[in-house]
Image (tube, rainbow, N blue to C red):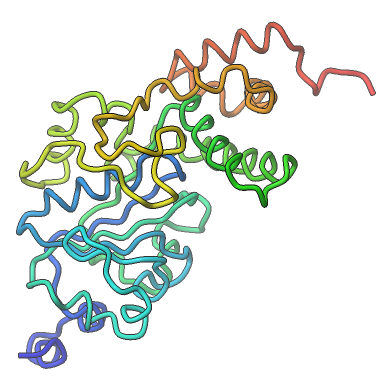
Length: 297
């Protein structure tokens, strides 16, 4: 029986008709770039209840995610993107019913829209099993993002810093939503803790009602060129993700960004609560460099 036949027989949602199968778990994921999004997405897929999954990567916000994903994976492997955009069911329909559906957004927080539902446009949010927020410690995240952009020769210094400063503003909003997660019904995954602790990963799987099938860190994902610092690493176990900011400590561009961030009255209190070590370092920067807002013209 085809997906269209099932729709008429059982009133199947039109979303699943277009998808080509009826998912089990349906997870929507948010996170800033360079926060370990793809490593975590791969891990979630490896722990799908039936062992099968479809991942729609980096969907365009405020539109239907089934139409605007930047790439697609089936069972953890890259699938033909253009063909999937033309006829999603021809690609996603290769899995059986009850396979996981995971779709993600980058550099977007639900609070940017009038409602969480508006992030996904016309997609029926009642079909979601849950929302996931991925976040990372500020210093390591900012260092990784800057390092990635510095490798792009088409980005001038001013363009890099404009992008990074806007990203820091969005990062602060995401942290606000992390603090409101219980009220909003989100499951939060801190990339730093996820890398460091198998018990933490197991706890998150339990929160998402997923079985523990493969709790390893997996392979380094190729999205965004892989690791900003360790291009030759193939296994995520090889990555020194907790030392990114130390590797950028002597970079004057990184120092300038930290100096501005250290004076952000909205960001720093959130860091004090969620990443106190990062907040302490930024506080020392403030002590050494008076706020630009208090300077004279």
